[in-house]
View 1: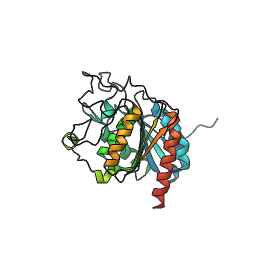
View 2: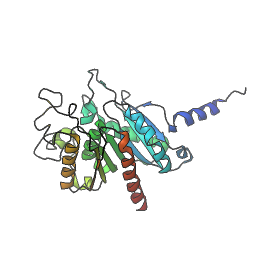
View 3: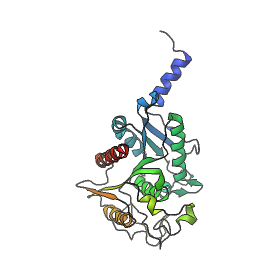
Length: 284
């Protein structure tokens, strides 16, 4: 059997691990945090792509579900898929939800995602100065808060079934409201920029369990007003939609009939939304 030369082996490894459904990579800016991607093989020939960042929920395994679930969409819509992985207990304390609220200890997850995007854009020779973001459950937490902080970086945002929401309320502090946004994160709220972002909010109408989303006094993320947006995920997302609309944002709100807290069953709705936004964006 003929042995592969060094160049042949390197090219084969690149094709296997860096294109299509990729390996899991550590982030260069913070190797505690990871990512995996779907990159259409046409990118190897210099084809320009858009980017979707898809953010997992509390179980983290949805990172693979989203990478694989959006792969066909990415192939036929010239769109790479980047799925960050933020491990449970990254600070050694067993905490599951830090990323959802943007900051945890010394980690600013919004900055990590921006660094990941910059890293992979350079790697694949792409301009991903703006990108789309989708997240479901814990990822829905992250996505709407990222949109509040960095609207200028998004060409679309799809927010799926977050358990808790940050309303655009200037009378309450983060995370319930945005009064101290600039003091906490160094970024003022910019409603004019957020209003430029097409936003989808999607939740199953049977997503009604409250055991995981009701904040109790003494809980890690409890604060006054933590449960005021509603009791269930549909109620809380509807409150978020109203808050965004009041700020001038065009929100497409989809309550999917017969669906509970099931990320896979909303992906078709997300793909349809993103495909329309991409079509309109490219037409311009």
